Length: 355
Image (tube, rainbow, N blue to C red; front, side, top):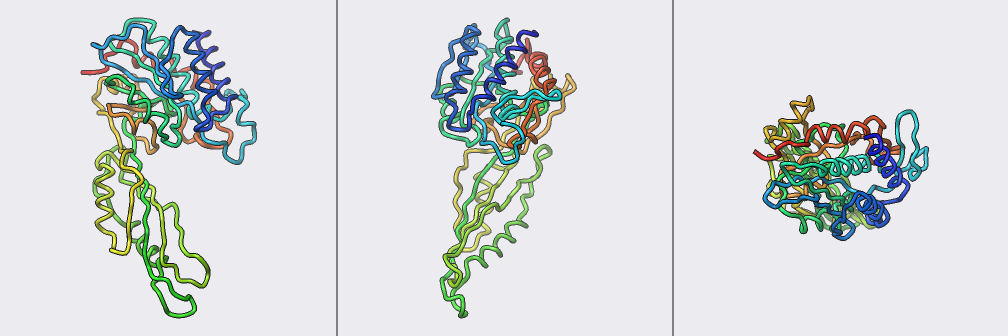
């Protein structure tokens, strides 16, 4: 066990030291592949994504997918350390991607090695993906086309090793408000910017009645606005963008239709995608019941992950804290990393994953 942790820690440090910002994951993918090969596996390469089947894969058994991502965001301003130099300090390992999602990646991979070393009532499957941070077409969206039937998926995002059994969906809406141009010095035209600000106030007060016990209400936030061409021209167009986080009680399309219904005729709206819907696994699912029996506490997550792309029952659970993700001086606590694989094994080893 000590050697496994030492190997896992060495792999994580190697990944931190290898820049893998989204769409530049070639080197990180090669490093993870080399570790798989060293443990006796030949991964199926789906672009830069890496898929591992267990040595005793049996199509007649249910299948458990373990997934984490290899890419990171760009380093933000404010780092006091080199983000690409792994540093152990005061019981913490600092470095870009240490928390999101390096610790989850190496922990689930080494849990997979242990699960597959003995008979299980399910097929363990491991998938390392790319482009998660931007929901890119070369990541999970590409890999799902090559997956067998999946009964349950465990996504290794930083959750403090608590099961996040529900996840909010995401929909980005682009609004275009129309007015009429005129000279700013005269009482001419129809100011599209004024129209837009009045509409934004209306949308801010719009209520979605269905409130989830785990995810709360649908969250609608205006994040961008743009209007005007020069100071003395009344703007005839104003565009603004909304970030919409849906709960599992509404589909993205339902929310879009509700918003569209309250818009005036001088405003158009388009959704960039309807695909990233909210998801949830039942609290009475065998794995979640097992988690509760271990003293773990199911909760709802406001952040998006590759879980949104997988069409099966799924939940998130991994070492670290999502509050540290995308921040300066990102870190994973060493004890969080050390406890992850034993906890995964306690949850999953020899357990039945379907009713």
